[in-house]
Image 1 (cartoon, helix red, strand yellow):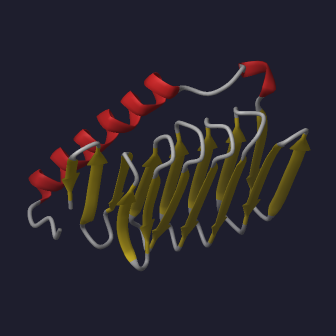
Image 2: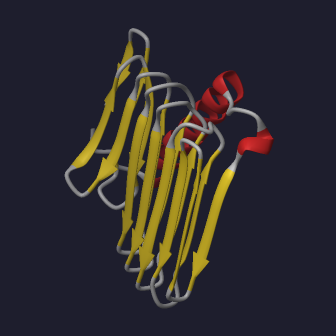
Length: 172
């Protein structure tokens, strides 16, 4: 779907944000004490492994990256460079959240349920958001957006593309 006007884009972002919040509230993460967190900025790399939990944050010059796994059995990876910002948060067991931000782009990737995968690649000053529910896949990348499984939301402001998959509802 090519979203034409800024008003429609903002409405889509609001609906995407509400759906993402709903997924996180419904399927939330594991025990807060089990969280594995990584944060990096300005040419730093931070990696933590704790039991089955893994996080990596890698930030280039003038960039920030934050990764967190709250499931104690998943992975979160955030990579940013050239002024970008990346946030990856995995809240589901056996799930993975991957985010990147390049050339002042912002990537936000979240999982909210078991066996989910989300990938967000923000680039060229744009924002990409991907939220995957249980056994879902949400992708906002340079190749476009895709929402797979029973629950997923993705939006890429650079291309103006978005999708929402919620049971029988499949919007692109």
